[in-house]
Length: 324
Image 1 (spheres, rainbow, N blue to C red):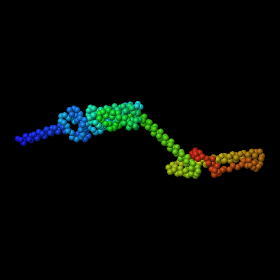
Image 2: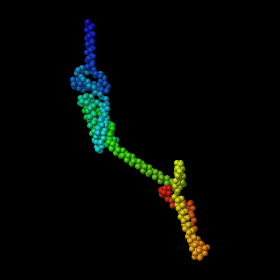
Image 3: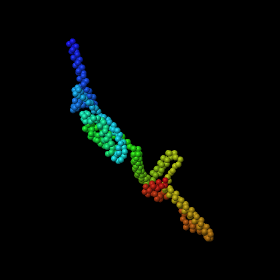
Image 4: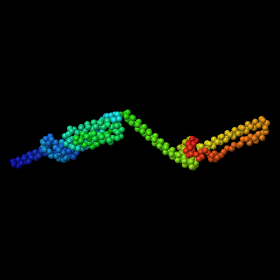
């Protein structure tokens, strides 16, 4: 009987210990912190992760997650400072810095942060311009973070980061931005083209000065052009003629016309002499003495006395271009 009484007492003690452990021992996870309320009054000491011993019935433990929370901010529609209607959504990253304040000072800190983030986002939209929302978001993100962080400090919440995810524009504004970008690209293309033409003109002027010192270089360049054109297997080949050759042909034509006029004048004089009764030999001799014989100049003489010889290289290049 004594043994049974001892065993019963031991069993009762074990049962009481189990009940006490169930009522007083709690487990706090590594990503949590514990806030203890004793008879409804919060204890300043925050319980760390691990086993936590509580006073049965008197203490109540509330676990607070201290991980970084990623909260998307619903898209907010507003009018920017330059009167453009936009729809902006963002995301806020925060975590609990003081579990006691987050538990006591605010009923639901997640809902509170969400509402503050929405109102701050609408406010920052009205203070910003469209170009800043599209291309210069870093200052806007910092300003939005400060606006959310001001009330969150009193709740024991630390705002880690705030970022604008997307900016939705009306279709008309998208078309306007596209036209602006197209005009900007066209302006750059024209500037680049003009710059290329200016550089090419400088190179061509230098080449003209070199060719003016060695006239045979122009012939070599002409032959090279012919080779390049012939490589394309074209059925038509256009060859530029030098201006000196054209002037030679022009002078030859003028000399031929003058010879024809002189011959016509000789025939008319002979006929007039026959009609007036003069002798043919004396009339013909007089006509030969009055009209000197015109000889056709050679090609070398024309080239030597060419008006382009010794002229400015730029003028020579322009006349070659006109002849071509």
